Figure 1 (tube, rainbow, N blue to C red):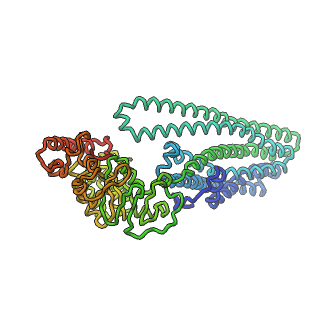
Figure 2: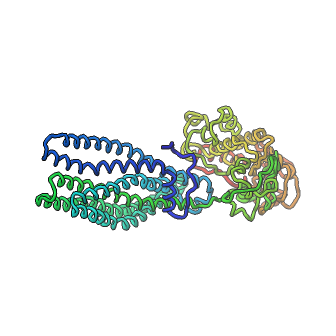
Figure 3: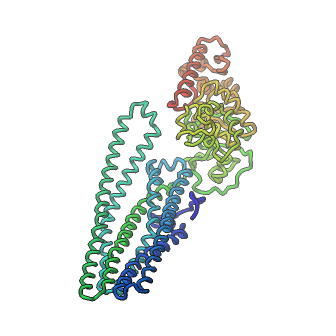
Length: 639
């Protein structure tokens, strides 16, 4: 038996549930074979017990307490010990098979989800994915937990039938024909049970989806007063799940009842026939006891056969749901890239917009439309090959789609505007590749100005963060994500609005430290903040998805080109977009508290008013994002 989880869950066939289950069988044939062997030993020993008991009774009646009786008793005791040992060890292997199949399915789903990107949520509801791990993988494993005992029961049934034929042909025929008839009668309920189980599984998946979607947006839901609507919808879907569950329980109860009734009737018929034959002298008293023993024992094969059919039915449904997840094609890297990786220092170019990032430079990307600049940044990270096929991005002249995705991820990292934080320790959240030196972690925290996160987390770096970092404010979450990105230290780092949720003073410190942190490395920052733009090597301004200007922030401010007023509006936080271009107010140094108009004076009343509004905006940012964790970070331009 191997340790779990597995190092490599493998690559299963996805043509259908049966092929998938057969693939799992071959994957664990070793421990499955041992379990089957132990199951055969267990039930073969139990099948021999009635025969030995009957023989001991006949021997005792005929010869008293002789050697033959003692031999039979000793053999009965030995078979009992072997049966107990086989049952105990066999149960261990049954559980091992269940866990192995369940873990394999769960790991396959997890691997698919982690590699699929946004494709998984685009094709399947969240609840389907969660249920595939929480329910369906376990149902698949149950099949392998009962398989060994089922095979052992079938072997025991064959042994019992042969022994009964040796005792009496009529009794043997009753066993051979009657037991399958009982099993077929029970199997008649399996198909309706399967239909009801599928309906209940679908209803449960929809309920899980509703619950998970609501939890992710719970604060927004509370903010708009939508708890009542959610409660009504959840209660309605919960009742549907209950109704489907009652349907399943009704059929299941009939099946459970018949599992007792039909084998019991079979025992009555067999014992009645045996008793009449014993009275007639056709069989001995010991053989009558043997007949009763087999009649009682053969209830186990019936029960195990029914359990096998039920487990196989549930496993077939569960395997189908797992395959639905595994069939999701990753949004990028579905076709392995074969082109050689460009040498270090190769420029990253978005051919559609003209945005380019040269080696070793700190570049800012500015756009009047925040979504536009975010789309360009996303393309640079190769997140969706199909959607980006018409907007290719090259690294050193080679399209990203032609490169190996794993190697590309090591060289190009995109940190999105709304990063996700997982549950776990703060240190583990920062270090995605394994244990890092604490000094290196603290350095990244200092670069991201996130000391307050360490101080406010009980236990510091060893302290636990809840899912999505809900205990942190919006600004704190953003700075933790920035520290995480800086720790990766990739050759090319793309940061989308990394400081949009922090106050002006913090933003100024981060911008200054970013220059030192990424010195000699290639960095693109999507931002419209003057506090950041003042520190970059180059600003690239995009309009309508096309690069229209590039240069330093000061150079672009001084330009009189047609695009200049639009640039002023974006970086100057224009309060009134209808103001003529020559009256645009440009904030060039918010930290020093100066507001200059386009003519370069500092006594313009419009500029003074704009500066007051700017300070209010900064205060609002501080209040909203640092003190109120419910407020989402800004993802747009700073206007």
